Image 1 (cartoon, helix red, strand yellow):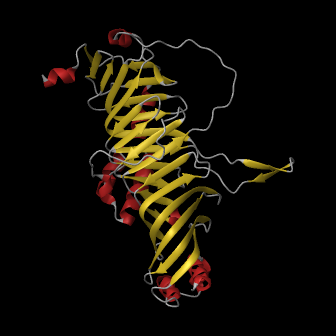
Image 2: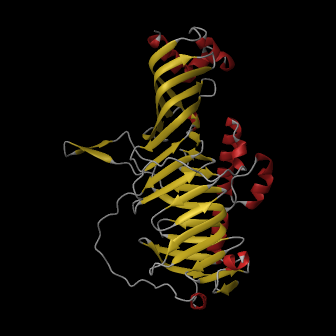
Image 3: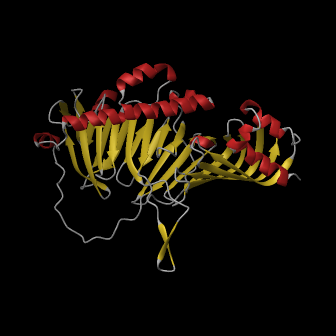
Length: 417
């Protein structure tokens, strides 16, 4: 066994000081020439560092085999991910994987289960590709995500009358819509602008999106190009079928996401972009789309441990943060119910959900709204649907003031007759 030899050699691959002894392009090969091809080691630890020489990840494996001068194969892995402050924010359990030494890239085979340190964010998928120094990864579909909101603080209950839903859509339109300004609509368009495009369309993307979303688009496009998965930007597969993380009924503070195309994970920027056919569920609504869903997480708050009831001890663990915002695009459909239990359906091609406000804004082509037996279809490009949630139901739904055609028979059924 060569455990004691291989471990320091593998660690040396990660250390910048070694570059003074060997040329960069020869570094890995020169080290591994000392280790026989086919050699097996146990209980191996491999750290990775970012460009600032801060720890980005720590990979441990029960068994490692040297397949070549550039590749290792491993079994029984744990991948610990660190934030920019070098605190563990998530750990992934992996059955088997290959590790490319030169690229510091982990290619997982089969089931992978990642869980944040605070257990509030989980992803399960059928494999993944991780660029360890950059804290980026791609979970291969089909896959499943479960996000659990932190418990709400106990506060004195204040009872306020809820704004009732309008029984007739005609009445609903007659009432002034919520205070949605032109600036807010402009922000909506920037937030939900298409981000997932082939690299050849970068010029078009720059003209269509704001600076923030363009950065996301570039990070995603560059990462997928690096790992050879750019086809995920455009392909649409059959509806996703996955093995959920939790078979119990969804709790009020949970969000589940099923996806089939993949999920791009960026630990530095606390964002996850889901690709392909996507099904998102909360107790308040269900959303489906077939292009992309972007999840933005709040920055995690560090929890300090008390020591001797006097001094506070800083923890080495921190989570990924709670759900902050969702943006979705591509053949979008949202289903919910009002306070009387009537079904509400909203359709469009892009949406923005703000968790702190429990609000949803839907816009785009083929904009459609249904409440019970009343139907409305948008006739103007600037039309929108705005909804507010309370508990498990919609407490208020509003349409933009103008640009709607009202019907009291299902247009879809009439079309099929």
